[in-house]
Image (tube, rainbow, N blue to C red; front, side, top):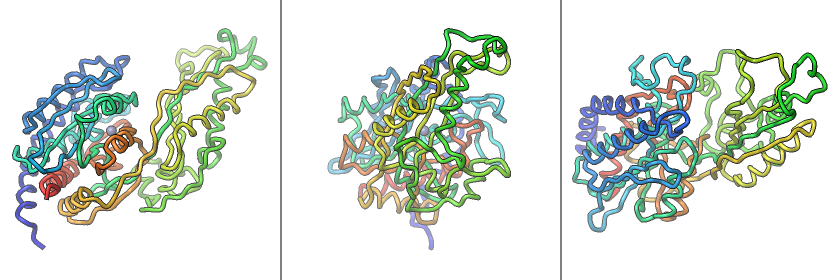
Amino acid sequence: MTEDARTAGLRAQVAELMPQAKSDLAQLVSFKSVADPRQFPPEECDRAAQWVADAFAAAGLTTVGLHETPDGSTAVVASRPAPAGAPTVLLYCHYDVQPPMDEGAWRTPPWELTERDGRWYGRGSADCKGNIVMHLTALRALGPDLPLGVTLVAEGSEEQGTGGLERFVEAGPDLLRADAIVIGDCGNFAAGVPTLTETLRGNVNVVVTIETLAGPLHSGMFGGPAPDALAALIQVLASLRDKRGDTTIDGLPNDQVWPGVQYPSEQFHADAGVLRDVELTGAGTVADMLWARPALTVLGIDAPPVVGSAAAVPAIARARLNLRIPPGTDPAQAYRALVDHLDAHTPWRAKVTIELEGMGAPFRSRTGGPARAAMEAALAASYGRPATTQGQGGSIPLCNVFSATYPDAEIMLLGVEEPKCLIHAPNESVDPKEIEHMALAEALFLATYAG
Ligand SMILES: [Zn+2]
């Protein structure tokens, strides 16, 4: 079957725009836009925000502004009004990134977009700067005469979970009001397999601190009877998973089943880079564990580092915990269960303090509307195969705010982040073919949704 003229024309346009997409992504990746002033100067985020504003203005959006959100970060909003009677589409992305973590584990410099074996490496190359470039390339391919209204919002603190844009939307819902919302912070089940993400897990983040002594003590003179804060923390943390690796928080179900597409375990093994002979965790299937059940991860531990540690019994130890919860689980209830569990499993009546960092509800997107139909057709035309659906383990609390604020809007989650991207880990990368295909799909969607 030959392609219609519009699809063929846009496909050629997008292909021609790919060198510019690469240089844009290189520029974006060079900004160390980690929205945590304790780690990186805030100017890095400011420069990224300004770059995004300028780029979308140049791509034909007419009203462009930098808006301070209640958490002190900056959201870029750029829009072009809808012609009379036409719908408006909101394109979402974020320009802040996760810290690079262990820079020594990177095979290429994290802040320098580097091509290796056909992929482009760098922090944020996929999450979410690759999606910024996807939106940008789609708009450039269409040119300024759009048949519908478009609003672009680029959030500045998504990875911090501080809820800036959520409160910004609630405080002034008119600025981002739209008939369809494209959340460009997801991706395909695998490269080349067009996929809409239907559900998201929610999350609860806490920091737990355990204190036992007025100060560290000589482990020879005091070790044994002296209550060791780090040993207590290790006991508590060990209680959060069973031998198989299932998350075991008292009062929180952990036996749900994912009804949709299954994720073959060999594929997951490869996608996740699980070391040879190392087993996957949990009693369920990969899809059950990833999309339908809770998962507890210890994100960080404050304890004496190996180099520089003394022969001393630690007096204090801290851990940062991240609990992912599936659709159907209430975050406040999950938080309560986690706190009760941590309290109940702390040994020796050690002093335990639990701080809530943030939480977000799980999400399920609506199906059956005109935007969804147009997007499915656009994805199929771009990739030459029908679109499929998946769940996602990550959470985007903003989706719940959008669905509560704009109850009639169709929310769709997609993007360039497939499993090989290793988002949030060292050696993050993006497949440029995904940027090309997804930008084409988005351009086709914007061209056809207005009818
Ligand atoms: Zn992201």
